Each structure stands twice: as C-alpha cells, then as structure tokens.
Image 1 (cartoon, rainbow, N blue to C red):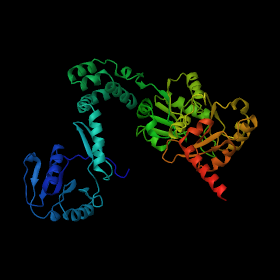
Image 2: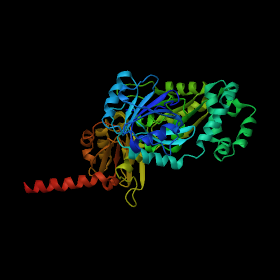
Image 3: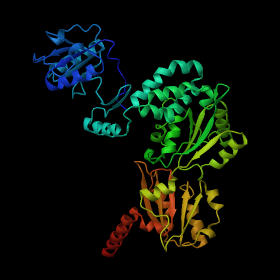
Image 4: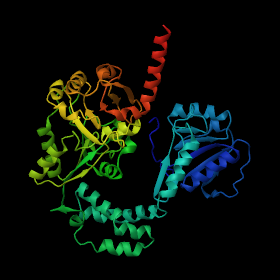
Length: 474
C-alpha cells in the first residue's frame, strides 16, 4: 500500500484550484459537494460556473505561482498544463499536499473513486495505476451498499454521547452498537423508519445487558477459525466476520499475511504457532492465553492454517476451553489437502479407482515409522500426508515394504492456493527426489492413482515420452 487513505476536512480552510475546462469544473463540483471553499485560478480566463454552486467559490486573478498560500490546506491542478509542475514544486517547498491530475510524479496525494452515502463515504484507489479498475470496484460497492447506510451512521451519531454515558467500557460499547447495526433497530433505519428505530433504542432499559455484558463488563468468547491453505479469498464468510469482530487474534506460522490482514485493524495479533527450527510456546501456553483473553472480556480468534480439526489440535483447545467454562465456537476452514486437490485438479476420490481417503501426518521420521503402512496398501485408497517432506524417504520405504507398487503415482504440492504454489509429480519410488524439487514447504503429499488425473501429471507423461524417445534415438 503506497497511499494511505485519509479523509480531509475541506471546511478547515480554502483549497486552491488551478486549471481550466471540463477537468477543472469536475473538480469544482466535487469540492463544493464536500463543503469546500475554493479559490480558483482559471488558466484560460473562462470562469463559467453554470451548473455549479458558486457560493463557496472565489474567483482569483493573476499568476497562481505568486498566489498567497497562507491558510490554504491543499492545492489541485486540473487541466493546468505545465503550470501544474511548477505549482507542485511550490507546494512541496512549503509542505502543502498537492494533486496534479494524471501526474503521479508531481502529486503527493491522489483522488480515489468515491461512493457517497452522506455520513458514509467509501474511497477506492489503485495508487493511480488504473482509475478504470477503481471505478469498477466502486460500481460493485454501489450495487451492494444500502441506500440509507449514511442515515444509519447519522442515527448512531445522534446517540453516541448518551450511550457512552450509559456504557463506559469501550469493548462493551462497541458490541452494543454492533447489535444495533446488525439487528432490527438497524434494519428499521435502513428501511426509512427512523422514528420507530429511535423509539426501540430508547426503550432499551439495560444497555450493558443488551450488549451481552455482565456487571458492566463485556463477556469474552473464543472462536476457533480455520484460515484455509493461504488464499484469503477461500476464507468463509463466517471466518471473515469473526476476524472483523476480534479483539485479539492468536495465529499460527502457517497463516498467510494476506489472511491475517483481513482481521480488524486495531485487533492485537499474537503469534503462538511453532516456527521451523523453534519449539514455539507449547499447546498448554496457547490454551492459557485463550482462556485469559476470554476471561478478560475479549473476543479472541484462534486462527489456524487449514482447518482446526485436521492436525490443528483444535480438539485439545476445545477441551481446555470447555473445562475452563469459557464460551467458544468453531468455524471450519478448507484443509490443505482439499486446496491442493482443487488447485492441481487432483480428485481425491474417483469412481471405480479411488473409493477411500486417509489423512495422516508425518512431521518427523519417527512419526512415519510409527504408521502401520500395511493398512494403506489398498490400490483404491488415496493417502494424503501432511507435513511429510522431511519423512519422505521413510514414507516411501514403509509403503513399498508393505506392498504398495513403486509405480504408484504421487504428487508433492507445496504452498497450495498461494501465488508461489508448486507441484512435483512422479511415482512412489521417486518420492524423496520429488520433494527435493520443491522450493520449501509447507507441502502436501498425495499418494494414489488419482494423481494420474492431475494437471501436473499431463506434463509428467509428456516428459516421460520425450525421455523415452531420446533414449531410443541414442
């Protein structure tokens, strides 16, 4: 993010506009709609203000490069030609923000695409790279944003002081307003029935209790959230909602930065996962942190890569929370095995070929050695191995010794659903070599005939044919 979105109070001082033609007039309409006082230097001498509220526009004469900048809060150049570059140098010299239209080099701020709903304003920017994309995003937001969302913001604003006096605690007050916005009172405002909404809100006798608090303090809750394999667009709607409501997020190493960015901006973020080569804080310490956060009245999210209940120790955390009498809920996520299957077109089951699936973990060689491979030799069984890169030689040896064919198709799928995802496919006897082709994990191993239906396998077969032809030619 190169540009930080901010909202400028245009009524705190005059805005200097330099330029002419339709471009300048478009800026005049935008500025006056925001209540700005505009001092306009029309570089072509044409001060036509037809269709524009002229009450807040001052027509300035003379050279804008010699203009008095005292009290000016920003400078805009639209249709100003070469004067824009000179104005940029002057603005930067005195520390004033300036926008030179279609000139990122000489601008210190840019105009976003705007959705205006009164007290609710949404700004969409692309860093100046593509205004057309910003407009398309704005159109989609316009389509889903309620027409009276600004009325809802104004409605809440009118009650803020009185509710602040009734609910001093910030966290509990925020939950009060969330219940108002998401509940029937908010729906009344959005339906244009403001008088009924005011009556309903005034009838709330115990505001802290309405917000879900006891003795004036917010009740805590822990939500176990499956973050999926990495792509933030694979978060469920419920997971996104939990992240937006969280006071604190306890996250694992495998949670991508893009997923973590979906959490509420002012939520505390605490890493608790085991990192590569480091022991981590331990499960007992993590359980303790979750319980302490809930007892402090916080809404805590335990964010795990994939799904909490597939090699994520979610069951252990639920037991600890239940034994501590802490309120909790569970939101499933897409596990990495399913993410790999979807991205690389590897069906985990296939009619008449693969009728069963086994998920197992083999983080260390000892883990793999402890597996009873004899129960995994069925040709119609797909075996999905989590955290199996280090133990790949032991996995291969165990399955071969148990009787699985060395020509069984296998795939190593790394960093699935992420931009740097990678795949290596081959046969079971090649498994350790396939792992070496991957530029680091995390990775999923899929073992079974289904891998022969995957997209990477088509390239593998082509390479095999080419290799055989070259060998025959020699």
